[in-house]
Image 1 (cartoon, helix red, strand yellow):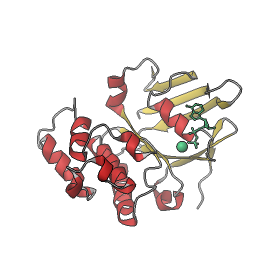
Image 2 (image 1 turned 135 degrees about the vertical axis):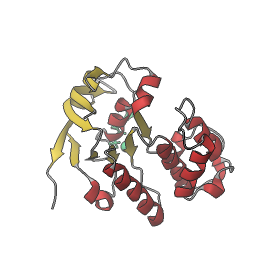
Image 3 (image 1 turned 90 degrees about the vertical axis):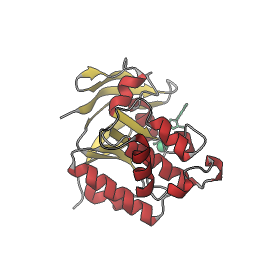
Image 4 (image 1 turned 60 degrees about the horizontal axis):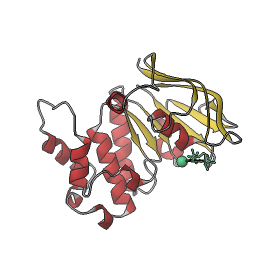
Length: 223
Ligand SMILES: Nc1ncnc2c1ncn2[C@@H]1O[C@H](COP(=O)(O)OP(=O)(O)O)[C@@H](O)[C@H]1O
Ligand SMILES: [Mg+2]
């Protein structure tokens, strides 16, 4: 199975303040991996490293035994999508419709569905069809968050790295999002998920890890 293998990862923004010291972790692409840790422990930093935004680390990160560090943006984007914690930081255009169109750029066309049909289907599923031509600055935080989830659906087959994907969502949207994760799980598509609402997704989690004292340790499942 395809996976991301992190071995002896060390990273610090400032040398005197290490975030990771020889941390190791494997992320199989067909599993849902849950990551937790206190505020400031390094959860978002790990996401940034895994999405190629931060390269100043020591140690090895391999995807399918290939060294990840020299990957180009295009090579990385073929297999991974990262949904950032702050909703607006995922936005790349003026309106949801344009934003999702940009997310489709460079995609292999699907034989049975045009790009605009795919956008329409995704927006219907996340209940954002009416927002499609509104400027982002008119949308609430929760609405912007839904557009980020729509970008994930456009990138359905990739490995998802999700930094607090359900915070700020109402219960209906949380339910829809959990359905999506369940559906993907049955198709063998996993994700790395960081959330303070662990109870909502407990049944879906294959493995849980805790970032603590610059290390990443597996936590036993609670039954
Ligand atoms: N760009 C940066 N420069 C310096 N320090 C940073 C930077 N980004 C985050 N940090 C620090 O690194 C630590 C880990 O941050 P972060 O990964 O955002 O934690 P978490 O997501 O677990 O709350 C925190 O102490 C934070 O202040
Ligand atoms: Mg964070």
